Length: 271
Length: 107
Image (cartoon, rainbow over all chains, first blue to last red; front, side):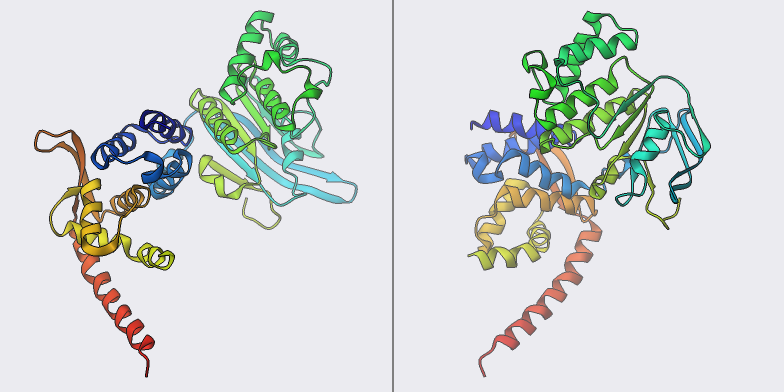
């Protein structure tokens, strides 16, 4: 690995983690010039070094989290849902504004996916109501793709439902796929030949087709490798910065600083 | 050698502060000072994260300057808080080392 290759990879890894690479890369480059030694010896692999630096910076990046400023796009009020005798959701409120990311967390069975499906209008609550202002994209935890259609056919089909032409939908889908480290979806074959992780990328791309105002994402990164997982959060932030309201169901508690607000559905936790 | 690395991990930040009492400096040169001080070579992958943490905590302050006609570099210097931390943590460390020596002494 040449010095330039290493520095480029290091910059990309920092960008993936939402850290401006300029100063850190310049400092590393000066050090390499001064010491005349190989980057792998001095700093180790670019990704690992980026992680260490970002950890050192933590606290400094807390201002990434911000208070909502846009209008409310999604308002779920006093949602109650029972399955048989057990009540899964006990009067949950969720409000997400334009330009805001909310993470929904909670133990298994605490109703995270149920709440998301209620917000998406796929199932009805026993009481309470959901109000969505604008268009909606939903990414399920699994399923959601048709086994015998190719990625392009999915783009066209879902795009058509959202008023995009074939060409538009295909172009938008391919661009979004590339941003998730899936460079050539056109040559990947039909959905059932895709790996679990790639099928989830397809799901995520479909959720974002047609530029919906509200995005509901149910642990959409199952099967992603670590790089794609970081790309996923980049995508979430791009949506947020474009004024979308984004809801992410997640179980990775270590990553909650990536969201602007957190709703914990674990019974007994403050709402 | 592995043990040495572990020791260093606990006091590297204080050593960096100590190295900066000899005047402001940039990353590579700070590493040289530490090596000259007998700490062995300090990998950049260890040194710069420590510098970032110290900067974030306000114990050092840094700015970019071109020095002596050379390339632009990030220079670090001790803040007042860094000096105070070095004095108090340095004293704690001396007590700790004294206790460790005493306990390891063969009777």
